[in-house]
Length: 493
Image (cartoon, rainbow, N blue to C red; front, side):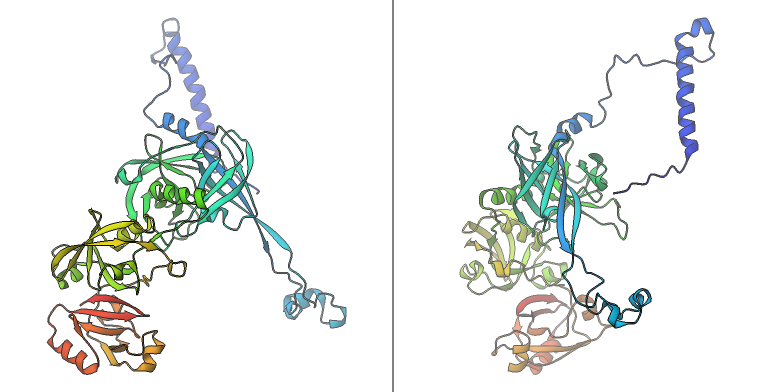
């Protein structure tokens, strides 16, 4: 890779040099103040005090040896200009003429290989060479080379990867390696110092400083399982897979992504996978080469203030059960649509993402206790979790939005043919939304054409007559049960 360095202000270099000379002269004058009779007496450092310890040098010195640079190589096919059809391009006729008999490139041929190289970072977690990084750093790589802080290089192999969390584990054949101290990401707080260490843009090991800007960031569309630590410590391309550490040098996260808004570099919004999640994934990958997650079998929704009010809840927290999968652990335990899960094993559930992350960190067949609110009263429900099926690894969130209104909504009766088109059972009941006015609050809130309204204020809706009657009797607050693509969810009006 060619590197270009632009000196934009050479006069700054000159001034710095001039200042250095000036200080040298001043220092000489100060040390000979009496003989030279200098008008300015300077107090010079003797050098015996040692380096300042107001910064993070001791922390960095401890962590740097455990952060590595990763170079991955991928081989891909590149399209060739001499494939069939290419001669018809005017650009090719310009160079090769219009005589078909003289063309040698009309027959397709196999595209040549192209080697792509990517740069990233990794963190040594064990002295025998296990390194954690991002999945996207090594995904599809045909070759991986790891460079240690002491410049030693090793070939690495992938032990396992989990695209859903963007965590991968690679290993090098080495021993007695320096490794980082793993912290507890559940204890970090907004405002804590954070240091990002990695190999941005391939320039070499770099340390940047910031604070923890937020925790529990989700719904970003970066990964399937999101519980990110957000930091303003500058993170750039190449930092992926590197270390996010606290002011004690403990690993708290694996740097993963940035929000750049069109720029190729840092904008002060970076994200790291919490080390507790990364460690859980790493342990499974090292032991079995794959990641298994627990399965509850519900479609959770956030409890908005409108939802809380509609269900008679004082506080807008917990996870609303929008749907229950057939034969799932939730169904077998008696969990129902409309239940609000308040805590898991005594730990309060803030929202649907926290519930999802909590369950995903558990092992299949684990026995848990859920505190559930149903019809205004609370109860405990014991559940034995299952294993997340591969086919349903992606929970059906579908960008669900919980706020909706009825004005501007047109519906029609649901028949067997429409039910089949909408992936519903032939005997499904309800009314199909045929139109939502773009200027209505319903459109702004997310009610869509094709949604099937099955309940209004907990009362079943079988046809348009039921719907009109329910709407006519509804007051300021209305709760809809909507079936979308085979899964139900609640919408508060």
